[in-house]
Structures are given as C-alpha cells and as structure tokens.
Image 1 (cartoon, chains in turn blue, purple, brown, orange):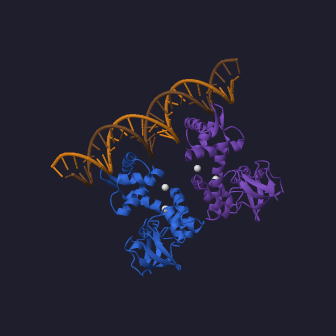
Image 2 (cartoon, rainbow over the protein chains, first blue to last red):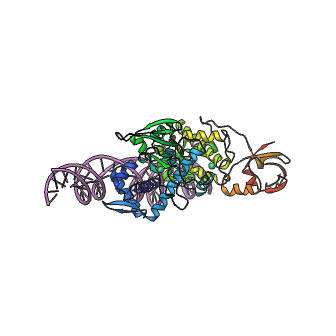
Image 3 (cartoon, rainbow over the protein chains, first blue to last red):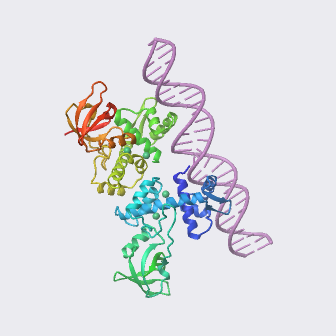
Length: 218
Length: 218
DNA sequence: CTATTTTTTTAGGTTAGCCTAAATTAATAA
DNA sequence: TTATTAATTTAGGCTAACCTAAAAAAATAG
Ligand SMILES: [Mn+2]
Ligand SMILES: [Mn+2]
Ligand SMILES: [Mn+2]
Ligand SMILES: [Mn+2]
C-alpha cells in the first residue's frame, strides 16, 4: 500500500510543486521518474484512489494533506541520510544523493531519531537543502543566487541549486564548498560571468555556475 | 533482474542449507518467507532460469556458485549493519534484525567498506553469527551449546542460536549477553535445566534456553 | 505393498508497474 | 479562429509476485 514506487512519486511531486509552487504536470513527472507519460497517468489514478494526491484529468496534480505528510517524511529521511553520510562516514557531497535515494525508503523512526540526534538535529543537508523536522516543518531560508550579488559584496556559500555530481565536484575543486566565504571582484556584463576571490584565490565563474550557487550576504 | 524478493530467496536458501547442509525444501522456504508453497515453486523456476539455483522438481533446491556469491553478499551486509547499529548507534541486540532486513538490500560497496572499516572489520555480528568477508569467506567457529557443557565448566557467551527479540531480551535481563562469563553450577537431570553463576548472580536456565546459548570454554 | 497423508506442482486469477501505439484534449501559432 | 503541435489519456500487452483450488507425486503408516 506504500511501495517504493509510490514514495518516489510522492517525493517527486512534492519537489516539483515546491519549485514552481503550482500543480505538477505528467510530463515533468515522467521525465524525473524516467518512465513514459502513460505510466504516469496510470500511477496518478492509483495515487488518487489512495488519497495521496488530487489528480485532475488533463490539468495537473497536487498532494493531499496525507500525501504531503508522507512526502515530507521521505525528504526528511533522504536529507538526514545525506548529512550522516557526509558528516559521519566521510563521503563527499557529490556521492551521497544516489545512496540516500535508497536509504530514504527505510521506515524506522528510532533509527532516524538516532541519526538526527547524533548530527545535532541538523536543519540543512550537505547541499544546503532544508531538512523537515519530525512534524514536517521546514525552515524557510532566503538564500540569494550568486549571480544576483553586486560587485564588491561579501558572501558565504550556503547551498547549491543543482546537485549533480559533476557540478558538485567542480565546485569542490574551486574551493566553493558550503561555508566558504568570498568577495565578488568583477562582473562581466558581456556574458554575465563573474570573478570572485575565495580563500585568497581568484576564481572565474560562468553565469550558469554562479546561478547555481546559493549564498548569503555577510 | 535482482530484486529484493530474489535476494530474500537467495539469503533464505543459503541459511536453510547451512543449517542442515542439504538441499532445501519448498515448504521450509514457504514458511520462512511467509508465502504459499505454490508461490515458492514459481519463484524457484525463476531463480533457476537466472542460474542462481539448481532446482530439481519435487526434490529440492541448492544454490549455484553465482547464487551463493550473491547470498553471501547479502548476509555480509545484513550482519555488518546489525553490528553497526549496535556498536555505533546504540541499538539493543534485540532491535537490529528487523532493520537490517531492509538495509541488507542496499547495494553500495563503498558504504559497506566504510562501515566495516569503522567497525574494525568485525568477524562476528551482535548475535555471534560470522560475517563473511568481501570475498565471501566465513570464519568457521565451533561454539558449543550451553546445555552440552559439563558441571563446573567455565565458559563465555559467544552467540545465540535463536535471535528472536523475546529470547534476546530475556537473556539480556539475565545478564547473559555476548562476552559474559559464567560457571555451570548444577545440572538437573530431570528436566535438563541448569543453574549457572554469572557476574556473581545465580541464574536458572531451562533446557530450551541453555540449548540456544552458544558458548566457548575458557 | 497398499492406503493414507503430506508435499509439490499445475492451472487459473489478481495487482502493481512498466511499455507502445493510437486517440483525444489542450495549447500555440498563423 | 482555425490549423498545427504538444501533452495527455486510452487501449492493449507484458512480467514479477502473490493467491486459491485441484491434480500429481512422494513419503509414511499400517
Ligand atoms: Mn539528494
Ligand atoms: Mn528513492
Ligand atoms: Mn539478523
Ligand atoms: Mn531482507
């Protein structure tokens, strides 16, 4: 009644509706879940019968209260595991997502409580994403994308908007890990790239890279 | 091609054939896996097609080399997780089997290597069961069942032959945890029960209990 | 060595998840 | 507003895992 497939749908619907705070389309789901649109239609009817989503034919889907609760639980487990793997088992921030994708489905509240406790009940995961608390409450952060920061501003890396391993490894090579502080030296109006100074090293960042780094003014 | 169901079959076939060093019957499998015999027959045909088992109709089943290798991997993961949960996350030895039943299916060699390393590459799990190494090799132990120990013998608890939570909790209450040392005070020939002295406390054990405690002479 | 009991297999059915191809519906451009 | 394109749904099919009931085979008892 609550399979891994269902959990992956719920989590994905949650993540997509967070993103654009709207109803989720079948196409988006099909893409993220690596299945065909026809499969999504079928699955949504099923989730609707289980009262996990409101599915309106040819319009879109959103989570019910019950579905939302489940989704937040999955997201919590995913992010706690990622944090645990990085902080306690020495994994790199580019390696943990895939493993957490499986670990998130393990249902054991004592286990999650132990892990969270050991980590000091963290509020952010290794990519700067907020970790819902046991009740599903999320700390709302308002980080800025680095490409929107003005020249000469001081800021600190708080997270990333893209957590693909390639991007994460690239950032790490540049020293742009979570907590790194920097100053924006120069903005290139031509291609919207920028040069920042981080740990006494100048780094040149493309618009795409800067747009996927979340920072906070310091 | 290697689902959780298949993994549970392989592990169960392995465990049962270890037990009586013979071919495994459908009935035994059905009982352990909580499915009907007809389901087992079907599954075994499938495992046979995958070359994980040699299945001889109406006779019995044993693992192939490939199946054995997979089974040992699952058993290794199961026991490493159990050890980890007890040693690093403070779980009781009666609580970990159920969780490990799910964790054992997570495939990530780096994760398992990290856990094993952190635990000092343990050879026994919290119930005294041997942990196969990365190559599937198992340390052969020759523990004795406590009920076979003579009067006045000194021994140390090395494991249990039954790892049901009720039994484990009962042992813990009596202080008969792994590593506990004791001396056999008295054997009751009438009901084969015995009295042992453990940590300066006399404990009376039924034949059933003593028969499920694995010890080593000291 | 037969009769009975137990075990295993076969036959036929169900559901979740996946697919492709065709039909329908919605969105966009002319 | 119609024509075209894009998204969604329907129809029809497949496999893995489960089931029950009946048939067949093997084991056991008399
Ligand atoms: Mn992740
Ligand atoms: Mn997942
Ligand atoms: Mn176990
Ligand atoms: Mn299992």
